[in-house]
Length: 143
Image (cartoon, rainbow, N blue to C red; front, side, top):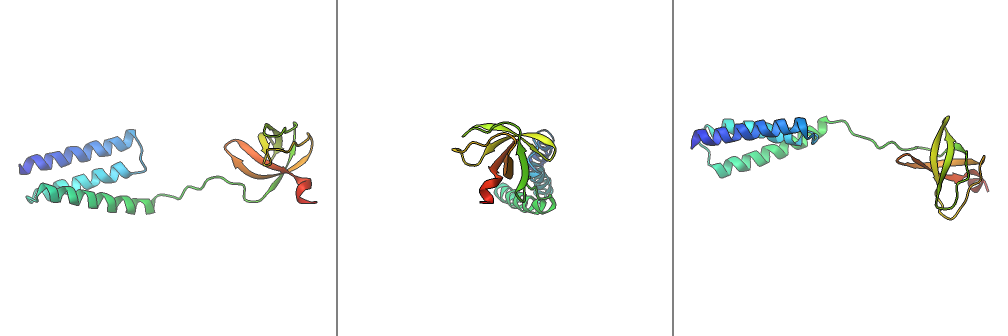
């Protein structure tokens, strides 16, 4: 019984660590695998299986929380300040058009779904949703 629980924890640890290679989970599976290896060592002392499972859960939680501190924070790319762009095409109400922003043509739509913006008009980019810029006419902010 002693050796079978140790082998069980070693196999579980190896499977979890290998799963991290094929299904990346930001080191969650990896930390669970490392915890299983640690419990495999502890199981050699003859600890009850329910206590082994509890220890594995606690170690997995602690290692996962600690690994989160080591990972870099991901920031979603945002447009910090409203920046100027110019419409290339007309932006019809509720539809997308094209703007020139930082030297490139972008898909854009007006923040106000009921407003149209004519071509060759100055607009301000207020945010980005995927590959679409959300714009407002510049004259609205200056009036």
